[in-house]
Image (cartoon, rainbow, N blue to C red):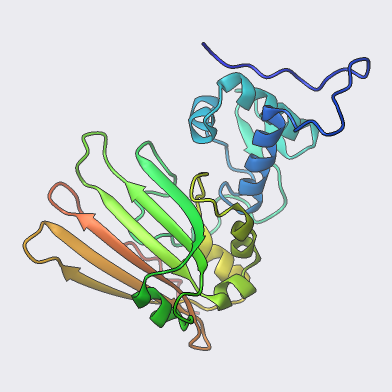
Length: 254
């Protein structure tokens, strides 16, 4: 049975002052947070209601009410086909596409079978050493899993961010309060956020075949123009039914 959520109560029947906000309002706030983080660039079309409902784990009616809230606030626009577009200020869609985070992410947009969360926890010793963290000190960690419907071609990635990254990049720092390891957290524009914070990114990818398996391990280390570590990602790819593709765009000289 589809779940529905009532609209704001009428003035004649006000909700108690300590009552939690309705579900659609919470979904609207969470979606707005993702839009402000750049998950969908200004001017670009939002995913459909069905996909948003799956993303937030609610009914399409709840998503529809959440979108109405953002439209009333002027944060979304609707075209003649009824599709919603982001109306937040910022660089328009169609500008140079950022390098997608994390390394090994399959496409520019998440899809069915992708799962991404963040947690505030203790990184592996290798990560702590690479980031210059005191052993046992927690930091923001990102967990990414992607698998095809058939279950093959599985990819798992674990990223740890440095204290420098959290201090310099506001969008990343905001995730500390949401790092419950449960809610979906797509940080696909993380490298774009770093660049907008004035950081020049230097990537170093180490690719090794795993002995006696059909897997490839990719370790990416990123530092800035001052040689300060920003993040380290450990990706494991099942290559039996999959291919790992790297795509780079270099600006024209002059």
